[in-house]
Amino acid sequence: MPGHHLPNDAFSRRRAIGQLGLGLGGIGFAGACLDAGLCVAEPPALASAARPPHFTPRARRVIQIFAEGGPSHIDTLDPKPKLAGHHGRLVEDVLPAFETAPPELATAMGRLRGRIQRSGFRFSRHGESGIELSELLPQLGTVADELCVIRSMTTTSSQHPQAQLLFATGQQRGAAPSLGSWCVYGLGTDNANLPAFVALAPAGKTEVGDQHWQSGFLPVWTAGEGLATAALAEAPQAAVRLIEHLNSPRTSLDGRRRQLALLEELHAEQAARDGGSDFLDGRLGQFETAFRMQVEARNAFDISREPASVRRRYGETVVGRQCLLARRLVEQGVRFVQIHHPGWDTHDDNDARHRTLCGELDGALAALITDLRSRDMLHDTLVIWGGEFGRTPTVDMNDGIEVRRDIGRDHNAAGFSILMAGGGVRGGMTHGATDDFGVVAVEDPVEVHDLHATILHLLGLDHERLTFRHASREFRLTDVHGRVIEQILT
Image (cartoon, rainbow, N blue to C red):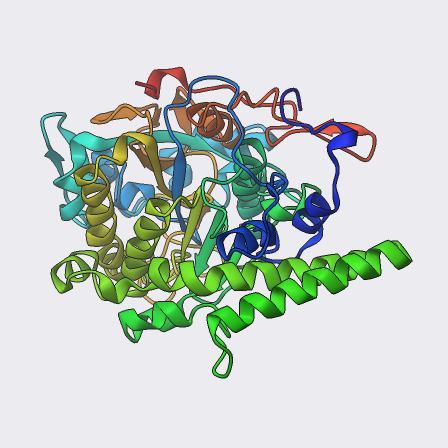
């Protein structure tokens, strides 16, 4: 990648420690020793140190809230009043054109069959911009003029694993680097004491494991640190327990400094004698990071330090506390925070489950946007919400039966919505449109690669120049695709 590859003669053992460490291993020991007065020489630059973007960025950091399973756009962000006039009719009687759609469109549409199902929720206009939002999102309505709603997203698979991988990595299969890892690779970290990329998931994994925050073939220090956050529902103090063994019950901080200094000395002697070991380098990287985190993580992760009134605004739910923690992390210089909010695969009980899930999300996302704005951080923090695809305007027929447990909706990849705010995105606007039934993006369609190209652009990175050589070829997040969505930029 022009401007980002280090010359061969710059490769040092310190850089190797940063690259070969596992988990949090990209955060440096040399700075810790310097802070402690244990070394006097200027430490070598970390591989993950901040580096200049390709051009002046609009955003410095990203908070992505991923709605796992695929929210129903026609019940949240994309009003379709014409559905009411056809409610209960068979889709083949209403939309005959889709019965003869080309294979690539038919695949993207997912499983469009059965009877038309109108939305069970009213939409109304909000803010000076008049953006229409579902009644499920009243708190988001209070920040409507900060929102950019893209109503013409498309993707190429209606299967969860493939669609999630495409959204996360730009590819439907394989161990490709994640969006967050590409951002960290391009820009480095703003804080040597915390990970540059943190992923918050209730179970510590997703339907595709940890691939949403994997580094793939990029250097290990670009990987996200995945944390299981289900305990956040218990109490705000649980945040400091997200990282196991953060402190030693028997050794003081000064004692741990001396232990680590001795370990570094022994490691250097062994490397000089035997030529070094990738495994030992990686293990040392983990120890180095653990030392740093003992001081910094307790402050950044302890949301109990927030006033009770602030915690109530975010909500006493896992996703609410994840959003509050995300705000604290970006304040401390974390480059990319990924929040996972599972449960949106509403083949059953679509309306009841959307009411519950939106109830958890609405106040939390509104509080996050409001908080960032009040701290003068919204202008350079990009906030994104959405899932891997949308849902059909029909009753779910996935199992060949029309009546499941209450009314559900099937997968729809040909047209859905996402929401963005801050970070150089125009507020108070919608972009693109689906047809009258919410099936297919018909105006200014936006592919996932276009979204990725736009996110990188907002961070000051040219998606065509951000490359990494692997297996004898140059790779990039957007592969051979992608265009920046200029219409939504400030």
